[in-house]
Image (tube, rainbow, N blue to C red; front, side, top):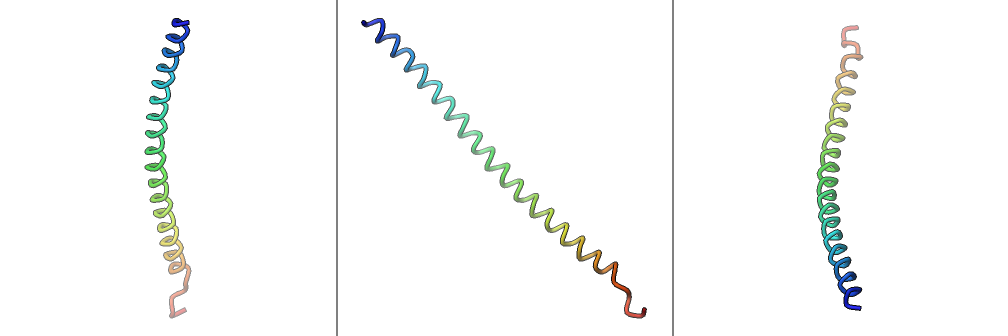
Length: 68
């Protein structure tokens, strides 16, 4: 009976270590995901700004000068 208890305790300790490691991985991945989402948001904003500037500059180029 005591051998069975020791086996269970050993497995439980192993599972606790595994859960701790998995928790660390999930926490690290969450931080990475948050950083990637912030970078993506920044890039999307820059893209939108560039597209707006491009549209504004094309509109000015396509317009005929007032003397035509």
